[in-house]
Picture 1 (cartoon, rainbow, N blue to C red):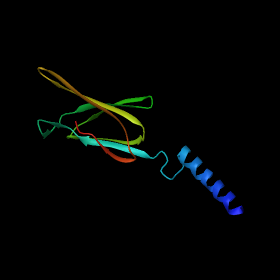
Picture 2 (picture 1 turned 45 degrees about the vertical axis):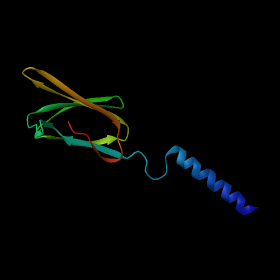
Picture 3 (picture 1 turned 90 degrees about the horizontal axis):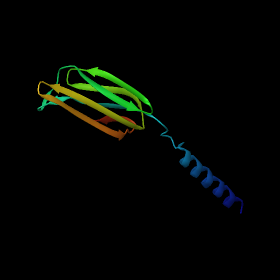
Picture 4 (picture 1 turned 60 degrees about the vertical axis):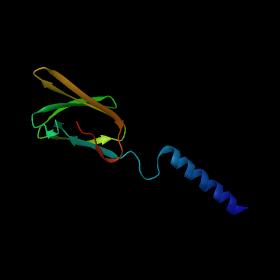
Length: 107
């Protein structure tokens, strides 16, 4: 009977650790990166990209056809960019829960 008690305690401990997220992954950091293109070509002009997550809001300007937001939480993140043209504008946005490590979204 003694081994059954240990097995039950071990199973309860493993279930508790799983439920509170202590299974080794934890809340790691993520980064979001992507390409900025227009008509299939890199968009080299400065482009403000808005990002929002967990109550934090920021806008950063990127040029050279690529962007990178490092050190993000593995939570829901929303990004948006608006390109302005002589005859109007185009807004592209995306919201998703980031995975730990690399996450891609192209504009």
